[in-house]
Image 1 (cartoon, protein in one colour):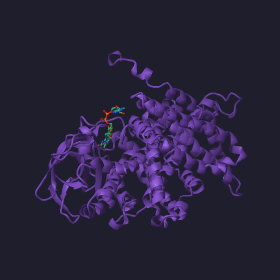
Image 2: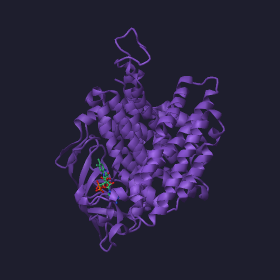
Image 3: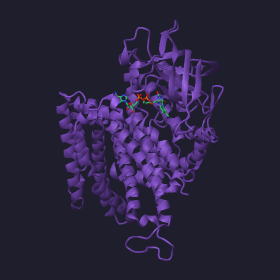
Image 4: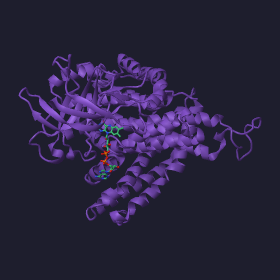
Length: 598
Ligand SMILES: Cc1cc2nc3c(=O)[nH]c(=O)nc-3n(C[C@H](O)[C@H](O)[C@H](O)COP(=O)(O)OP(=O)(O)OC[C@H]3O[C@@H](n4cnc5c(N)ncnc54)[C@H](O)[C@@H]3O)c2cc1C
């Protein structure tokens, strides 16, 4: 059975040949030391860590799962040791702010680290990415005192973090939350309420757990405008970053028994008059939290990619070895009882679809992460503002489209193995189960689509889309002059035209039909995702053609990329036509049926 290998060749090709990551970092003073050599060394180290420590406990973690007893959660065997080694290796502080003990690395690099971690062991990865998210919020909005007390031990991996938003009656609609915080005399607050589905809410990996909790102050306005953000430690902290053994009445009520990511603890958390500290301004909690949401959502898209890569590695090896039937054009392994199933067009369809989605998804993730880095590190305010606008459009697409295509790819991988994909032995059914959640959490994908269609497209009157398309057109300028890519360029232009026309149709319809945005949102997101993947493939193909001109070029690898790109344009991009038709159908057939007719 193939064991997970970090996809370093693909990552390096994208980072070096397609996106020139080192060139981007060199152009910004805060990242100028992140050279191509450093990127390569970090990715190689992470690859070793993932292959030797994280992948080996992925299957056992799934089978043994987290255990809950007497309010305590025990992670499966090996998780604590792997976590300690991960923290010891400095991986928990990679993107942290330098002034509080972090390494200040850009998101573009950590995005690849996250993809590898998710590919090797998604449950494990979640413990680390949640902490990264919490530290980001704290760095952006916490007081200096909170930052000094909490960031260093969190970066060091001694304390972990959570995001506590969801309540039993408040998921997507966070305006409904009931958790309350009342002021105490000492400037802290007393926080009471129940949160559900809290990833890493309780576990045995770290000595303390720092919860970032959404709650309402006594006189808060109703709805989302009345939500504040609080920091609530599991164990009381002494103010100098030291721990006391005093409980803060943060109690885990139970853990969920769920479809996948079984080694990730998903907890019901009860806060009972727990000591809490306001983060940022009162009633601005949701906006503050959303300032880091783009980072977290990008991460969830990477979960889809990572698991798809894991499935592809197994499925492509299997397809070269499994002997069933004969090639339609005559035997290719005449000395054997049958040919390997990779000779069959339908098996190739599945593998090529997976590969096309994985590579474009990874490229889109890199492109999105590079915009997050420009928005954060670029010395020029105008460049930062432009990158923020691109990010606003890109992230809902990246999160939803990469997690959807990641899940699809995992089921395709399962299908390549036939019945052997359905049984536990090969790990592909686990990947399907583990990938499913990325479509749901951090804002269900339907909500990403609504955000893209409503806030990002209709509300900006199409301006964000236009700005992104112009930036992308600049990036494919080289491909535009290469004759070999003329058919792909023409197909991309058609698809882009369809996307622009659909945006205009919905913008026009939205004034008269209140359901126009919701009705168009999902196919619009898919059309946007497909178009962005086409831009990514054109860039990849152009870079592959350029690399092929070098004397030492790895012909097999580069031709493989070009063939996959040709497959994408010929057999996947045409779906843009039916998506455009679906959008044009409007809301009538969706809204015609009465609720009782369902
Ligand atoms: C394993 C796991 C881990 C999680 N980790 C965390 C965590 O660490 N912290 C945390 O706070 N939460 C966490 N969650 C919660 C997760 O973010 C929510 O489940 C998710 O946001 C959806 O909320 P909900 O389940 O209440 O669904 P609902 O909000 O009830 O939505 C149900 C369906 O209706 C759709 N829908 C809802 N409103 C609209 C609308 N206005 N328009 C169109 N469609 C709509 C949604 O897209 C969805 O398909 C986790 C959940 C799981 C299962």
